[in-house]
Amino acid sequence: MSDKELQGKIALVTGGSRGIGRATCIALAREGARVAVNYVSNAQASSETVAEIERLGGEAMAVAADVSDPDSVSGMVTAVEKGLGPVDILVTSAGIASMEPHSEMAFENWQRMLAINVDGTYLPVMAVKDGMIERGYGRIVCIASIAGLRPRGRMITYSTSKAAVIAFARSCAEAFGPQIRVNSVAPGLIETDMGSSAGPEVIQRMKDDAYLNRIGQPEEIAETVLFLLSERSSFTTGQTLVADGGRVTLP
Image (tube, rainbow, N blue to C red; front, side, top):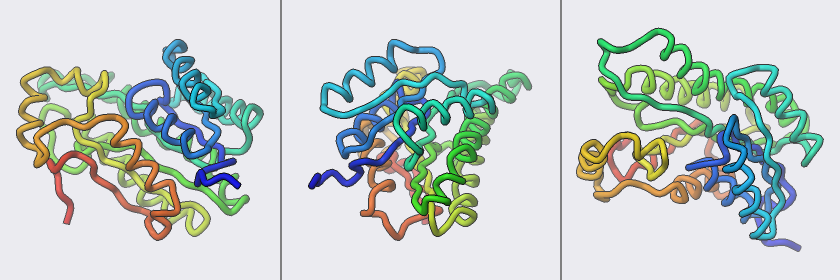
């Protein structure tokens, strides 16, 4: 009898090849889940994530898909079902960010970010939720951001997209219950490729703003996600869990 809590569960992680997504894939595998690692273009990174999971004794597969495209997402879920089995756990981690003043905002950039961050959350969730409800079990965590909880004058588009993710997860929790628990995680600045693009001055300012005076690691967010997927949070749904070192505190 395995003492791994997610033994036998099938997990799909969008944006699973790098950063928070990669750390989440590995954390899920350590707990016994069989993991589908989604990527859009970086096949090498996804292969490396799969290889790391296999090195740890787990089972994983890489699956390419553009999470903003309905047909691509449908094909991804079909591939996972054929390769591993029906999806029990979904983590939507795929996303992009940019920083610009309002005077330089372009509608094309607005559309692209909302397509990836919002449609890219909506489509995978909608693709797996009916099966979860039919089987009587499902766990979903949507990766949001503290940018969705506070003003971001130079990240209007990104902030809007992440606020939408938070509202979407909250509403899905009501709609899909009691079979499915849905929560979101709002990270602060994390040491990833996306996080490092903020630049040294911005990163230092964010460190100074945080009660812990540092930025976070992808593994720390992965552990937060794992908590929400586990039975340790069995009475928690429709919530946004902030993990940002203290830059934002919710009432």
